[in-house]
Image 1 (cartoon, rainbow, N blue to C red):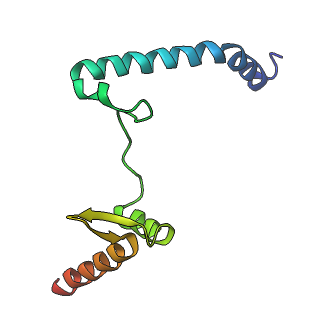
Image 2 (cartoon, helix red, strand yellow):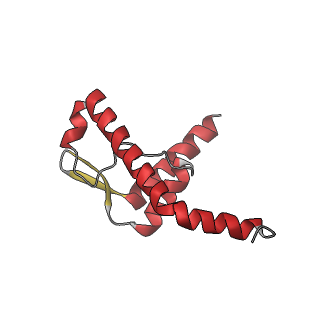
Length: 104
């Protein structure tokens, strides 16, 4: 086995895997407790809601295009009882961007 370091490393990872997962879980819980102390409103969040999220990698324009294709008729915005679909929001934002581009 010493001649095959990759195989040895995989065996060690399989052996240490459960302990490492437990350590990571405990670290996440400690981080959550620390956040709850510094941000008391977090204790009112639903248990499935993450305390922190990562920003998307793709640009917002791409995210809107994908949402318009997938959820075209679903309301993206609701304001004073009126809604705007993802498709309409995408179309109007493209018109706005075109207008800004034409102005230089």
